[in-house]
Image (cartoon, rainbow, N blue to C red; front, side, top):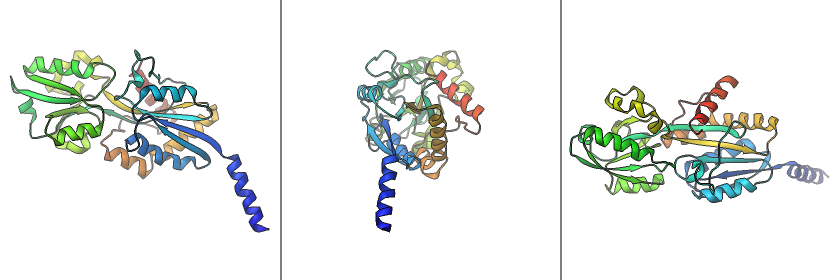
Length: 283
């Protein structure tokens, strides 16, 4: 009799569990998926289905446009066309009415990946190879054209999509420097500046008139939502905040060299200010 009751309770529990779809624009081993696996621990009362699109922004948009039921889209900016306003096949706009959470907001760091120093870099007539991230604009190239003109140096600029491709080029000594997020934790004392601190960097004061160029060079991990009630939005944010504060998620973010210093979820007001500030970057 007890077994029958237990079987009935288990079957009722499964019947009551709701579906939740999580879509990620990353790959199976990327930071988005690693964090998603930690996040779902807070959604044990849902039947969670995770779909990753391996940087295929068109597939990401198709899945997001056609998803049914409660859904979360986790996408890291800066490496595919998801935020490219000119790419109608891919563009998904983060807005007040669909932004659920931001898990990190990382400026792009400029670091040496070999033995070259800052003094080597700015030496007139010197030549260097720089690996750039791949935002849906030419701002990295514009930034280094300004820098090369100021210092009278020659630069070869390469767009590199993934962290693994960047690491392969660095290991093979095919690049001298890199500008991207998530590399400070690797190169640390060989990193010279980041795009958030250019404003206060005396060495780079000549760039101050060009805030529109470097001010957009961030990588953010957004969570957008769809088909949630207002109560569910509040509930999901609470769950994600609990997960975000947990050791697992923070360890992944720190290990990958990403930044959470600009994120404040200490109160509703702080949360609103944080999300609006980041959204403004993508207007």
